[in-house]
Image (tube, rainbow, N blue to C red):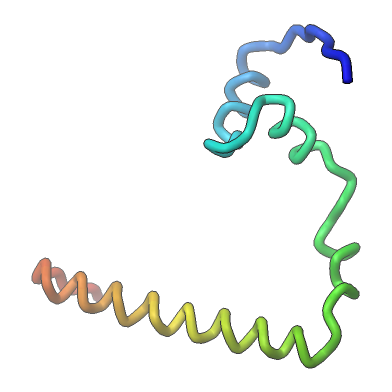
Length: 81
């Protein structure tokens, strides 16, 4: 696959740089950010059983995150209103 040089305005470059993941090249980031895929198009890839399992796993992670955050706040003696 060949390469091309492109010129970007500094603000556009900064936006891409901010969105670029550590494991991505700029080309990878631009490809990801300009992809035609949307969440709506992914909506049918899980059957109801698999979707239910994913929801359950996400709920468990959220509960774990909440507990760990509360423990950290207690350790640091920080009260949240």
